[in-house]
Length: 82
Image (tube, rainbow, N blue to C red; front, top):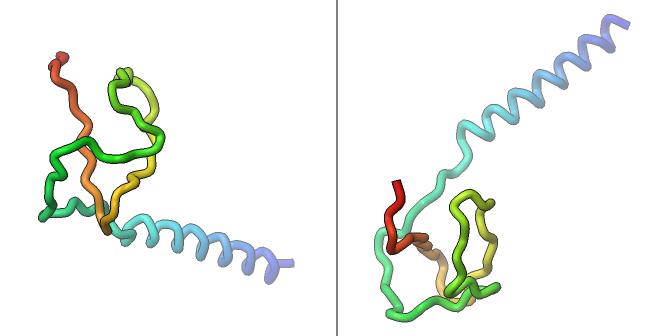
């Protein structure tokens, strides 16, 4: 019985350690340093062009339908709020 309890404790400790190591050493978000501006709105699906998005909404999910390996997205407003 003690041996079984010890194995369960070691397995639980190994899982916690694995999760902690993953969170410490996972790859971070990289921002492309070199990019070219297409000079036009991107093709995304669904198309949010012209939509007003409230500031307290969950992040939007969309697919960039352009060729490329990395993308840079900038969300902004013409009006500044305090």
